[in-house]
Length: 164
Image (cartoon, rainbow, N blue to C red; front, side, top):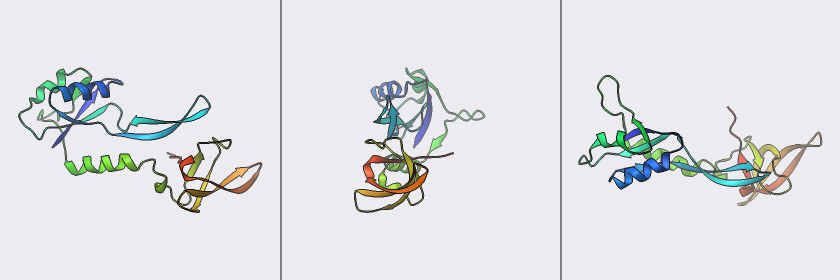
């Protein structure tokens, strides 16, 4: 059985460390993404749900009221009427942990997805994913010099663009 806590701004790791020291089991899902920083692509780990931390309370010997007084925690998310913490099923936590590993997998890119090239001289060039040429290569359709060109690149050098 899991509950959810709101953390203070950018203190998710601090809250996780302090709760682990108190004997709570915590889950802070992260994902690996590529970001364009200082004219180069850098692979970084980012927190999937910024500002929130999952806490396992299967062992009822823990005192839940200690969570609100932990450094890094803003408050425990509870129902206003009953005062009972919101409970999250183990199956949802399992899906979140599996999803965190799959977010930036090149195998998750499908035909027609918008992608950006993240390495080499073609860095920041965006296009449309056409197909996988082999286990490690992909064919893209890019708009280059006012004409559409097919381009073959390494699968590890592209990242899907998520448009809202």
